[in-house]
Amino acid sequence: MEYEILKPELKDGIAVVTISRPKALNALNTRFFEEMSDYLEKIKNDDNVKVVVITGEGKAFVAGADIAEMVNKNSEEGTAFSLLGQKVFRTLELLDKPVIAAINGFALGGGLELAMACDFRTASTKAKFGQPEVNLGLIPGYAGTQRLPRLVGLGDALYLLMTADMIGADDALRIGLVQKVFEPENLMEETLKIAENITTKGPEAVKLIKKVVRQGIAMDFDKASAMEADNFGSLFGEGKEGKEGMSAFLEKRKPNFKKNI
Ligand code: DAK
Image 1: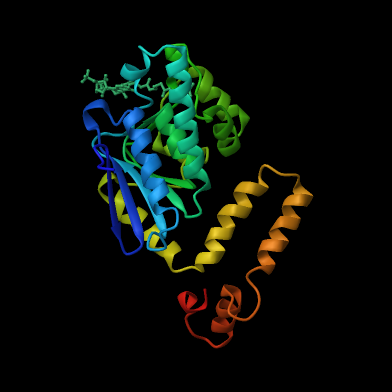
Image 2 (image 1 turned 90 degrees about the vertical axis):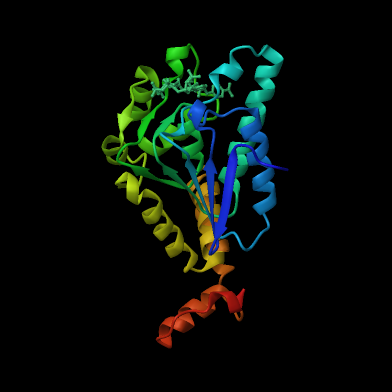
């Protein structure tokens, strides 16, 4: 599929995916979801892609779902738009590679929901965050009502959802909505450093971290702990990544993870 909106670039195992529809502040339309769906399918089993970074072109990360496209939809079309978006966000969340949102500007409505479906978030000091759906007589439709309280706690989530207030990067950092904040000109470079750092870790361990944390958070604690133990065990034994990592430590050398998996 030829992309009109996504600009993916792969370098040294890191895929930077730029959402490029700056005239509409990168608002999410059907075409975006089709392209993202196609892209995620493409990279799913591609071992050359180790970490994904999603960012936006221009002054927005994503200013929300495309209001111009949504306004004329009938109920059936609205449901189809919703189902497509939900599927893409969930596929992104469950992708067994780390996904970082590098938030360069406005992350509003569906844009903040997209960022929250990523594993963690970095932001420019110029970024602005909000769930303005109530201004439009809507509520978030891409699980923002569920991911936001899980990330920032009930009080801050309900505040943002009910008031539609836009907050800046400092407040986003304070409430845990983003993990790092950088000057705009350093955002990509610093985010790429974080991504590169992850590529030096045990790839199987990184994959399992994502799986165990994401599945475990929705499970009963004791069952989740048992699942953690099973996955922990899977890294042990001859030829396994844990064996190589621990041996390398004891032999005072760098681990060679690729050789062992
Ligand atoms: N959709 C479509 N176009 C948008 C847009 C959006 N969300 N946001 C901005 N644009 C367009 C503007 O219409 C304008 O287009 P032209 O007039 O130039 O043709 C262009 O981008 C530049 O925007 P502004 O001129 O407004 O730029 P400013 O710097 O003055 O203001 C702003 C920036 C971000 C403060 C402002 O554009 C704004 O308030 N935008 C709307 C933000 C918003 O309300 N976002 C939430 C959208 S609702 C669901 C699933 C998802 C959702 C709901 C249900 N289901 C599954 C059921 C999600 C809903 C949303 O995300």
